[in-house]
Length: 57
Image (cartoon, rainbow, N blue to C red; front, side, top):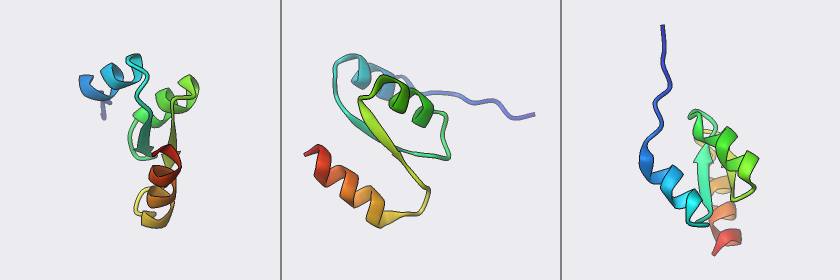
């Protein structure tokens, strides 16, 4: 049985309007994409990760 546990820091950042980039291996991607305050990238896709970070900066 697996259980998803979300850390408080990303949720607090989203509540303050800070955009996030999350990997799709965590439950955070659904929250980030639902709020529109960030993006989800595939796990181990460093090029996509870098591109999204550049777009958000």
